[in-house]
Figure 1: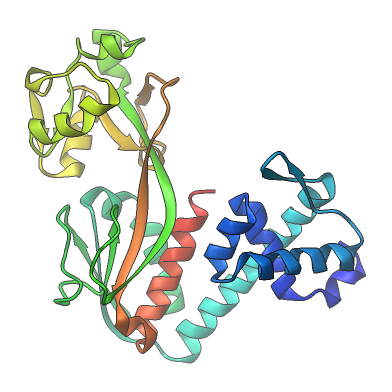
Figure 2: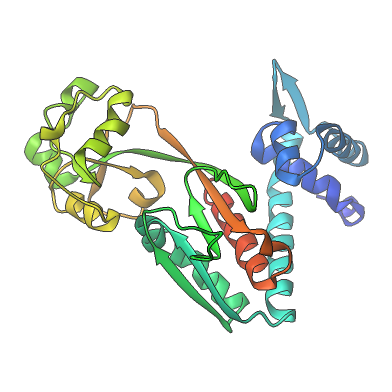
Amino acid sequence: MNSTSATLDWNHVRAFLATAEHGSLSAAARKLGQTQPTLSRQVAALESRLGILLFERVGRRLQMTNGGRELLAQTRIMGDAADRLALAALGQSQSISGEISITASDVFSAFLLPPVLHRLRGLAPHLKINVVADNDIRDILKREADIAIRHSRPTQPDLIARLVRQATAHFYASSGYLKLHGRPKTLADMGEHDFVSIGSPQQMLDFMLPLGLPLDEGNFPVGSQNGIVAWELVKQDFGIMIMADEVAALTTGIERVLPQMEPVEFPVWLVTHRELHTSRRIRLVFDLLAEAMGQSAA
């Protein structure tokens, strides 16, 4: 970028960045809480200011031009800096303190929350954080937690929910298990293997049978209600289990089973109560979680 960047309107840059990352004007508009025509005008204004075409329409989709791809790297740096500045200002200048409770599944709490909590501690060192690792849905309205990370959208009208991303999962097993029992090549082959269950075998069957896996309760000889324990059983060669790809990527000695299989997608919702509008500490943690979980999807 040249000296022109010093006079760019940040709203126009942010509109371009959101459109590039979400792949459409409509999705970007939802992300920024704007109308699609407003966002389109902002992107067009940036193109006019720079004198280059950033997107071109291919069929019904937008595709970035070479100029857009070159600009994207720079705007991501700008966007990260802006997010860090806003969060740092909120966390430090307003002396955030007190206690906040975050609830998420045991697997999410153990594997994916710690990096976010390190950053939160740096922004608000006086804040006390309680992580409630629970696979059951906690009742936000009854203040069993301040913020919840869920995989379904809550229906209560008094809650604030933000869809931060669509996560993906595949089937995984340890290299030791696959070496001993063979690597399945088709869905039909999966019926000859052991699986590790999270919860009851019937719960797992209710989830897996629609995916086309020819399984019955006999395929689940071992399992646990605790997701961390179940994942450890997979690591110890007990069988195959479905797991979020980002968790599997953090685990050594694990291989994806049926790598050609389409991923299983599931939403990640961030949920809190309406105190978000008045509590600085809840706003800080909510925004940080939304930013961090959104970035991890990229």
